[in-house]
Image 1: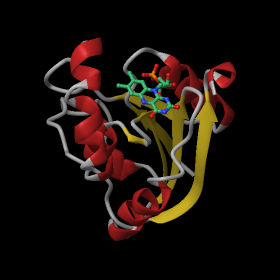
Image 2: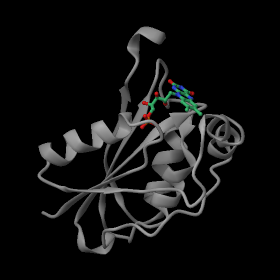
Image 3: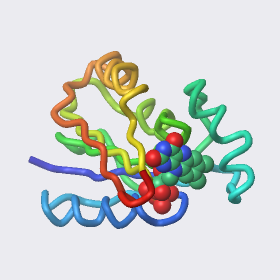
Length: 142
Ligand SMILES: Cc1cc2nc3c(=O)[nH]c(=O)nc-3n(C[C@H](O)[C@H](O)[C@H](O)COP(=O)(O)O)c2cc1C
């Protein structure tokens, strides 16, 4: 079973989680970057609105051939209760027929208000969702 862990990270926490998962599943890592780099201001405005509207940003071409993997884990931070916009671009890269796991990192909150829609996005790609988890990175803040 060839496994890929593909992720977007704004400030490094999702990257750390992605690395742990790649080790755990003996998978390969692929970081995704938005074509237009964000700073802390553009992450919040307009980033949060874009996340809530499930906007798809332009991303740089991934350094991995996603079609060559059987199982793909997608990771991103939660922004305003939704996966950060780059998540939507990663979902659009999914070929049908893959097994897909989702891990979303968040501060004190989680992704519960967007979870159903996110799961549907994976299924609409013709993929099987095998895992969906929230990873709380700053539990003391809730
Ligand atoms: C623009 C922005 C919006 C955020 N919105 C939320 C949120 O709604 N709920 C939450 O628990 N954490 C929120 N956070 C915190 C991040 O989701 C959390 O720190 C995450 O682990 C960061 O991952 P990263 O370092 O890979 O970017 C937000 C952070 C940013 C920058």
